[in-house]
Image (cartoon, rainbow, N blue to C red; front, side, top):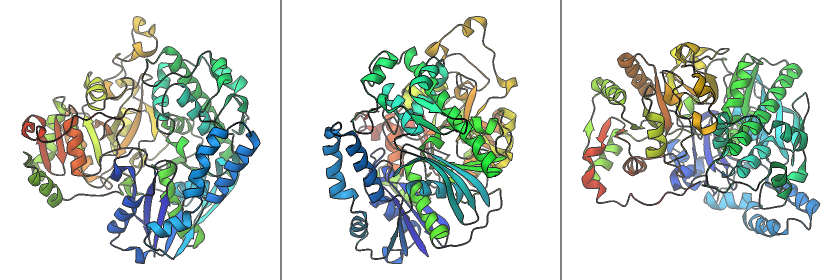
Length: 611
């Protein structure tokens, strides 16, 4: 039986294919269209899933859509009516889109899928999130927590999954939303909503908790069980075209920062403060869930579950024995969740988990390109390259990394979710004091404060990071947990350095791995395992053999404003637009200095869209 899951029309559209309960393929539409956060119908992602599953549309038994459009429309109408006549400008922009497209999902799906006449299943938005977290997890039973901006009405929910059962016990409803509170501060600090939240998280350690009391006294009332209410007098997202209003500006003493202007200490303090409040909600909710359900394991999804600092705090406090977070925690993961929901909950198919291995296969669920396809691309464009044998590949690349070169790494299947996990990554030496600046400013073309994540051999994670409470072989494969660098690897600050504030802290060397050690001595960890990504694992193992460091820098293979690369042409284009030194396409190695002839033949100097 084949089930096609679809999410679209808001941000990060995606498609996923489940065959007899097994996850076969999943991908975001943006990777194919090259339009970041593409919200359109995921036609390209659907076609890829069908191709990967070696089936046609006629073989699809069920289509599942990740939310209930009519219920969401009900919420939008009721909200506009409640605030009328305020919000008329927003209303006349939103309603035509609904009347033209979003209310006609069955007809649209049938049209886009060439006349599909089968059954379409509509789980609620948070059911899709919960299903993506629980059914893909390694646990036979677990509590689940979903936190995001808003689905239909729910903004937060928690409950319990057992076997193939999935039951929501409690939810918080719109307009009260921890995700929208975080997005309000994303907007206010000058970043783009639904894409810049991770910048706020990265900026937070440079700030102080100056505004925590202001936020808690005026914006949000948090109860001991983690439930909360927002004071809507300060927000504009219910009926306006912005997240915050003039009363919010007055409370914090200024209008929102304009995009691309200088980031001040004030923005850093705002980021730190909203991060602290969000962590408080996450921790109190997690404690309440553990006390109420008695479950030893927790699974998480929803956009707020991408807040790896908050996740790390839940882990650090040992509230649950084990935690598993859906790597595609945002709306894209809804495509996978609704398909899994249809198989297990709607159709009642059984599920057996072993407690160790999840069903996500490292989240390597996107397209793969074999030697022949890569060779055809290189030959067609007359690109100078060298094919590496398996015997020489890893030692050669380890030597390149150890001499402070940056490599574009394109290997195996593309990752599903927002994180590069060693399929489409830019990699470097974490021991290099200058590598963070090089990769941020000369390769990623992004803000200098942004930290980089380490990829570490799974069995050696505890040699480099203070991370406990989980089996070291299954610790953090999806880069969704933050933990401190080991004390003995840290470099204490001098008295003079202790006096520095904000961005002045940026260039202080904080450990023997300065390029991946954030300003608060933390790191967003990805553990790499031979059974899910043998190529990437062997590369890190070779680097460890050469340097004694089983860690490399891993950042997504893209530049600012661009989705992660999908195919060899995307990879080469990104390689040539940046100061990367080498490109690895499967077993083929390309050197930047040897590509000069081809540079003259392509238009690679176009402007990047800035967030």
